Length: 400
Image 1 (cartoon, helix red, strand yellow):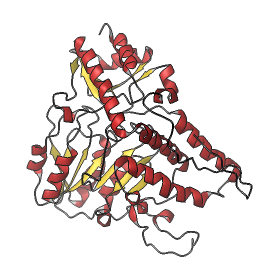
Image 2: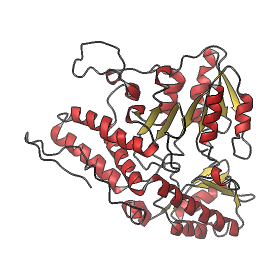
Image 3: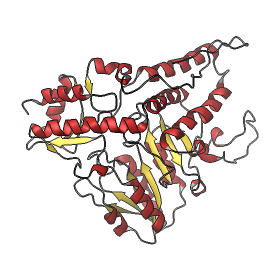
Image 4: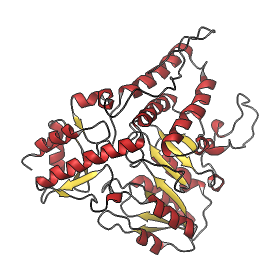
């Protein structure tokens, strides 16, 4: 899967991968996740395990740094900006120029919160069950006179009519998770997007629980800004992520953090000219996490090889199998299941008087990994998981 190019200048290792598709499919993807030989890992909505392609890509990059120092630095930048961003764009239906590399979801959310020009009296709409990353950056705007209007969740669901009811002429932005981390509720992005466009409200998505879990085509739905870390469903390294900025919305954001990479001055370090790079690349203020980005690229290539639609269908099949198995043993499913368009790869479940923390520890000791959220157990299988993992979980739950 990896190639080493021989160069005339005797630089033996280069950090570039063969752009041919990976020989990975649903039939064999489990083989490249070593953790599956020891554990039933059902916690991909938290931190996903590393695959051999991701590990190999990162090692290949670091081998180049070991042998050649910074000699290939210009080529790293060019390859990341062109080939890798193009593949990320292909996965989510975005243009290469609309993508910036970030450390995590929070960094992208903060870029929006701190980059917009706020006016006293503006308001932001937030669901009241958001992950903290999509809360604190907006709370900090109170000192500028910006109000948060909380959308009340109903049984873990965020309803379109409840969003609309809070909008007025001073509503500047709606920021919400595309998939809710605790309930697994999947937002109807098309409907939300149409509402925001009709009301002239900016739409900002925390998509870390969507990308890699559900297929996405941003060419079909208008989103102004979107952020997602790589370490969950994308199956990429910790410390990597993507910030998407719609080309039609980019001039609304002033990069809150600027540096050498914000501009395009090459090696002219003393030619000070704060003229932003075109496109979303202006939000990359300094040297990027290239080893992690190479690992992220391997993960993206794996998703493209499997295809996002096939991955979504596989995940849905496993979750359905889990829900049916759990219900047959008296477990109560908390995640929305009555509306097929609202279901995702996260499944929360509980029983009366359940000690969820104790159950999670017992399952971990039995080689089954899941999470506790809001007093319930939560699984998040990826496309490398299978029904055997669910059967192992059910066996470990026997007696609860």
